[in-house]
Length: 279
Image (tube, rainbow, N blue to C red; front, side, top):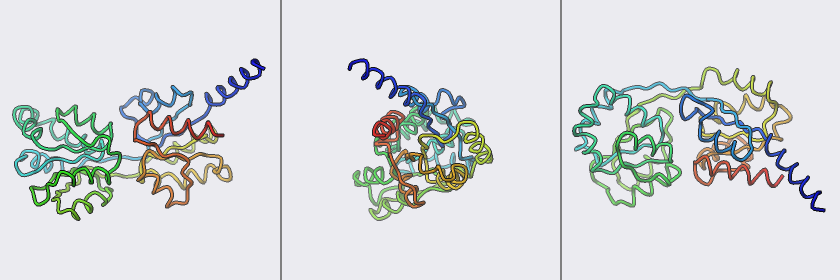
């Protein structure tokens, strides 16, 4: 009897070890193999493949630095994406002395709000202390900001992308919290997304799971995936990194099998493990 259980356990292990997961996101750094989501899923025995789905162009960086040069005009800063922090880093490359000499300390006297660990880590690299890391999405971050009771104060500076959702600005406006948005990057579909997806499905077949990391990813990838998977699309377990992305998936008629409790590699891995353990 024990031998039977051992064989069954090995079969389960073998099944999970070859489970393929397609991650529709940019790598954290240039090295895809070291991406924390790939690493976390690999530790659970999944074969994770990462395909970038978005391309970015940074804009208005001089204008952004003009605003960063006057922290006295603002209550604080809001970052809801790693790209927004990257824009700040880029505009500081030619202004490091001013940043290190005084601006960094002046901003650290104010509230710096972030969503997610990845964004918080990049803000930390700028030498800034932040809060809101565990909020998980813009809605919850807005609630945190509103709880500070800073209505009718100086505005909070919000570097953002061209496709930002209006949930956070709208909620802050309802609570009379002034916000000054500045678009610092433009988001577009990655030029290689169709060819990359086609190559993946040709070489790897139908993945066990596909994970979306943004509403934009859903918009740019879903139809291509449905074409490639054809009548086998129902075999795929679709997962979301967070509630906002999950909502976008539902709007497109997808069944969301898993939404990570928090937008972290570990929480995603645990969520996928949970749904595949039920199979």
